[in-house]
Amino acid sequence: MEKLLNFLKKDKPVSIIVHNNPDPDALASAIGLQHILKKTGHKRVRIYYDGLIGRAENQAMIKILNIPLCKTKNIVSPKGRQYILVDCQPDTGNVTLPGHVKPFAAIDHHSLSKNTKKLVFFDVRPGFGSCSTLIHEYFVSLRLSIPKNIATALFYAIFSETQGLGREGSQADKEAYLKLLPQINFEHLSRIQYPAVSKDFVTYLSRVLTSTFYYKNLTGAVLDRLPYPDFVAEMADFLLRIKNITWSICLGSYTNIIYISVRTTNIDADASKTIKKVTPKHGSAGGHDMIAGAQVKVDGRKKKLSLSIKKDIVKKMLQELNRQEVQNVFKLVTNEEFSLDEM
View 1 (tube, one colour):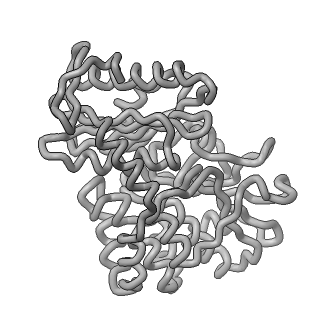
View 2 (cartoon, one colour):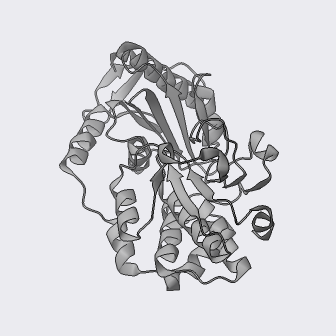
């Protein structure tokens, strides 16, 4: 962190950019870094994002913990700023920057990309289960106290990203988790973890359940329209809880993008590698061993093409896991066998 502070100029504004449709880890990492920069003399620091924050837990987190956010499209004088990417990296398909500007730095816990190496500064640690753990280490190294709302944000981010340290939680994540625990607001944490959900959410959940299929140890759902982009991640996590299931996939469309989310309980698997194999070449994909996501742009008016791409992804996923072509799967609710072409 000291190295980054030495590179940054205090007379120029800093724009922290998180990935599109930010999750708790991106939000917590951003507000943590913003506080650090302000405490070290950077007066003009704002957090920017693109996309939609639709998940009830994420909305509650922003409201309860007072996380200040701005839309990327509203950046004024984009070329006069220092851009720091948080929980993402340049040219990976999931982050929006104003036109013709280059990021100054990147702080992330995903696999290091080639373009990240070209930045003035980068701190990328794929061994960490959460980017928030990295930000917590910055606080410790600088001997800065952590405000209760930021401690709660970082704690919840580590918890949700690693599913209570049971999914890709490193030793560093565990240490940060335990150090943050005495500093959090438990009432706020409870309200974030168990927010009220809308009637629309229940409607979409019913559609997921009626469309869910399974084949051996894989379950999945192919959806038409999504209520918000990270709904696929939410449902992939949910479907993975089914007994005897070790892989889940959920995909659906939001505006002109197909979102895909893959999960596995197999600690020896490589979900990131798997999703890259099944995603069309013009799409972008990435992730970790047990959690991965992808995006594919498609003309929103061409529903048949969109459905064809979704079916093809599912077929490739089944083939990748079973090492053979699979023709029929089963409906989860009725246990009825049906052809993949009938989706």
